[in-house]
Image (cartoon, rainbow, N blue to C red):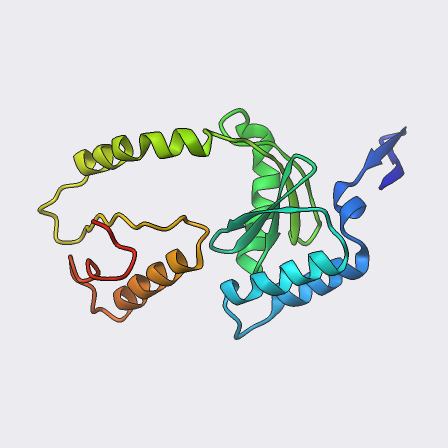
Length: 195
């Protein structure tokens, strides 16, 4: 969507990708999902996907973060806030990205409330490169972590970070930590843990 804007006496046209792809009615519904209390962020994602499909938003899934859901639209990474922390993160990244570039990705646009932000999409390396380097990455981690430290446990899990099974394992581990029950080695027998 293109809008005519006047800034310090200069007239210009500005394009909003947010308004181009997200009708106001959809933004309101997404905000309701983001504001929902008593619902985990993992449970909010299917509702967001349902709304995006209902409004025919052309997207590919990138995956969940802690408090934002990432999608790809027209070559841009779009982060949809799942809660108030996600909205704050979008606003914060929009505010600071210009000064931190090139050390962070560009943030092109952010809704005023932080619900949605458009980011530069960067592929650090391909999936083929990732698969080819898995053993090297594990070796580097093994070198950096002290195997005698009882507060650290390096698990190799045979799931992609976007797989629901990965989220379940992480949730199980985090629950045990929060309950004060965690100890090194206690999750070696979980399905999907290969090492």
